[in-house]
Length: 611
Image 1 (tube, rainbow, N blue to C red):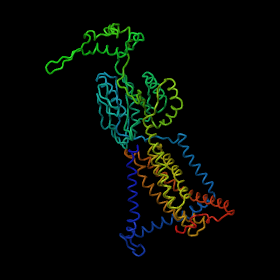
Image 2 (cartoon, rainbow, N blue to C red):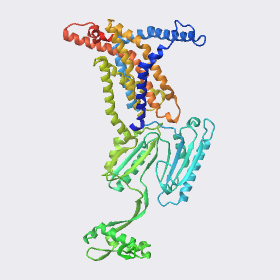
Image 3 (cartoon, rainbow, N blue to C red):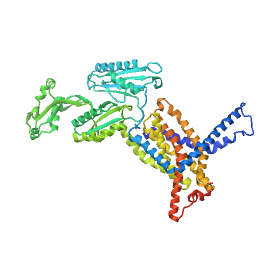
Image 4 (spheres, rainbow, N blue to C red):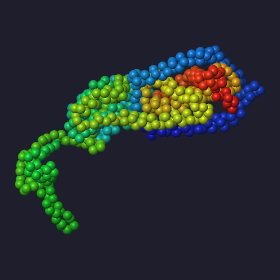
């Protein structure tokens, strides 16, 4: 997954590097070219200067009135009731995380992509003639046409643009070649013109198709975004074939009981019927082994080389086996005689049990154990994969392990990707936060004020969660990546606010006045920074194009987090500064036996270099 989104931070870092150069070097040069509006009354078209100045004065005056009449009085009350404000902020933070733990705000690895290609793949047992597969595909294709005919698109155009039916090969991610495989694929109208999600069409298509006699598996799937893997994919591993098959069947029956879980199937496919020989205990007393039995039966039907002759340049191998008549009848198999190591011959049925049973078309092994993978899709409007896994882990997995001894259960698919991705984030994210802290500590020559700034990171996540809730999106892996990126963005406003407050204190301004004046001074910069960031992300959030669907959760995390962090910076950061000052005063009182003034315990008061 890291490779999947690695291009995003590279582009962002490159853009920030260029913007830093623009801000420090090019922007001052550009500003130097601007005319002086006070000395040059005519600029460009007539009336441009007056209209621009009026708009500039209106916005400037409106912000000043808001800061003076609303922000500063409210900030004064927040500072007075700073501990209550802190408790309210912590309560909101706990409620936001409670939305995730309670299941109200769900998590999915990648958001559902409304694709324009849907495919159905049918698979029959090995040896099925192609006309049977063709008849099944006709039934599937007719069901698709019925769904398309009763579906009205937003634009009024036909739902299906093109369709393709193929026998002998699959068109989906499930590979398969042979007369027992077949696929039907349709290219749909664009999602903007269609007005119905492709997943809803898949569900309707599956219902309309109904049962197909003799089919081994039938899969309906659409386009998927991100790394491959089903929302639910569970591997049943072990050494006993019967236990693995029975456990996989019980697991599929349990998944059918969940509402919203569909397309449940396993990769186990029985092959053609085969004859199996099991050595009887009394055969071992004669010195026979399984290898002896298999070698002699194979030699009788497929031949064993008796002699090799050289004729010119040709090498002729002479094999000995039963006659064609003996090899064509099952009764001839029962009359086979097996030679023992002692040179005696005994009937096959006296030393081995002969049974008929389905064989295996394919056998998959991992870590020397046979594996059957059970997978299923989830309708996120009705169910959530994480909640299903949680319920299965509570009791069902332990029940299966106890019932079928020797099997192992491992969760794969999207859940494996989650474990791998978050495993790396658990290491990289704390390192990134530590790097941010070191940079801020170097800037302020303090270890306490950077801690105040770092408090904006978890509180900024509140806005990210609320943004998803407001727009009706579930949290996804891209949302988490947006929250990681958010940690480097939300600290910027806090840095410029605290830097201004420190300057006010260093200039000799009273403590509370320095905080209020600092907030008022930086209000415009913080407000327009937030407005420009949210405004830049809004087109992506409102985008309906397929290519932008997976990036919308990341944009929601950034926009919602930055917007909420603005309130946090303008109100809660000043409260943190006062609370820190309270603690400094208390430590001074304990250490020296008297209460100091608030300015005396502030490092900025003695650091005139910040002015």
